Amino acid sequence: MRQIFNMSAVTSVMLFLFLSATAQDQVIDASDPTKIYTYVGGGLKYLDYTNGESMIELRATGNLGLSDTDMILFELGYGWHDGDLVPGDDSGWTNARVRWFHVVKMSYDVGSGYRGWSTQVDLQLAGALKGTDGQNVLAAGIMPTYGLNEEWNLYLSLNAVAAWDKDFKKYNGAGINIAPNFVYSTDKWWPGAQVQIMLDYKYFLSGSLDGEGDATAEVNVGGEITPTIMWDVTGQKNFKLDLTSLRRGNDTGLKNDWNIFLNVTTYF
Image (cartoon, rainbow, N blue to C red; front, side, top):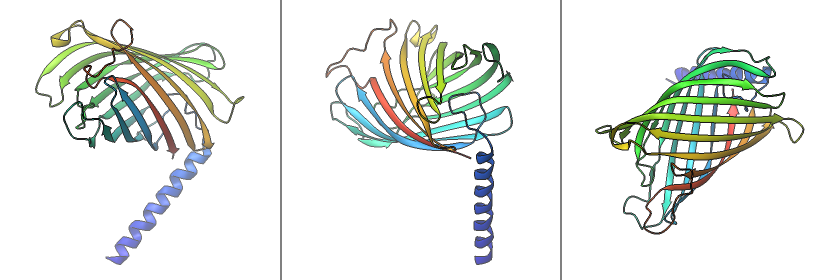
């Protein structure tokens, strides 16, 4: 038994060293969501609700590069709720996410103009903690990519979406999702400096959610700690369907008004 354990430990160490050496041989471009990487990350998130309550969350992320064109992303969080205006547990698992991403055609050497496109299937699952237990959303679509100049790029995500209640017992409806992501990257500010500005708009066309939807505005700033360890901070503000700010007050319930997330990621 001890020999088996020792062999397993040696194999694990050798695999880690191999992955680390592989990562050291490549230049990580964390600003490009179409690049295929394997990484693990985690960080602390603060979320503010419209009724004045809040949540602190520890969130873990992982991405597995399956091939030169395919990768799978995983996310999961555990949070602690502050406030008792809404009944429910004050701690528990928050929403989770699984996404398959496939690069169909991409020309990374194109400085300005159309570079190619990718496709994805993205499943976001409701959590158990109050305020995160809304519904399950499945999105599938394409993402054409454009180089605007040497420092700016556009990743345009276009998806069809479908939603169910948190137990998948009730179908809520289907709609569309448009999410342009403008990315600026430069080494002039600090190593690996990048800024992402994403606008996300969702509109339902059928079911009980027909005519409803929402929008978010997100800003992400990041950079390098080492060539294979990255940091980033993401701030997000949520809006109503007509792009006006959410109403606040004690009777508005647990609607995600704004949040901020500090994350550190290690690439292999």
